[in-house]
Image (cartoon, rainbow, N blue to C red; front, side, top):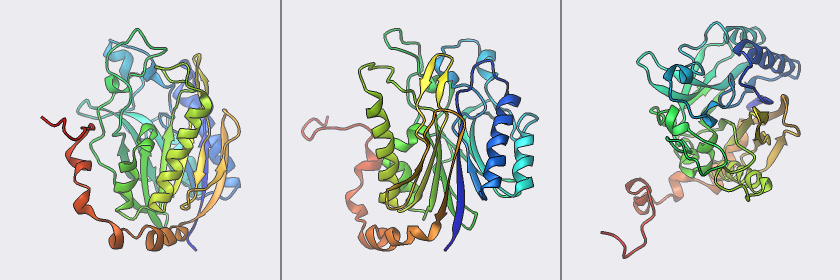
Length: 311
């Protein structure tokens, strides 16, 4: 067995007024709990250091850039890296990245047990819109504040296995998991900040949103024979509710651990990376059964075109 004991470190709400230092202190508390429970790896949410700022329309770039990190680690986050290294725990968390050449990304990083950054991912499937819309319940302006990721879906050899990352809306796209699956991924980590209601439909029940969340994780895990560790930022942020439902999903698609609150909460499970072998070698033996000559439309076309409607 190749066991990795994983802590999914859900964060409760982060308000607009909360400092980076206050948030990092909360993350360290969860990390210390993870150390007591024998974790090798702790995963934190998307945009773990700030409130979910894309819910506000901002025109002044300085107002936007206050939510972005220009380097990682930095003065505010270094204590987290130091605490992880002290305990010999690898970590992953998401943040808003401002590159030296002025590009803005929704980013996640992965460290090894020494605290060294060994992997980076930038969110590819950006939801929402780029301009203010006055006919929806609330704004979702990721397309305004972030560029689509430019690093693809890389995987990383760390913790004795093959690890990959994605972020929030990426979990809903089968291509996300499949590209990593074709690289032999054994564990996919993802952070998310998901509203309890849909901006465009206040009539969509929260239970439907949670169902689709779980469905995406479970399908991705099963169809690619990989562990999936999904970690929420949850609760009511500045009067905007986010649901929790952080989960660890086994390679057979079953949820083996799930959060029960919308506050800071650690869920722990020991994941045997060898449990991915049955699916990879038997159920979904890609090399034996895939027929790529029939899959061309997946990369040739973005939207659906009904036969006969082609121009």
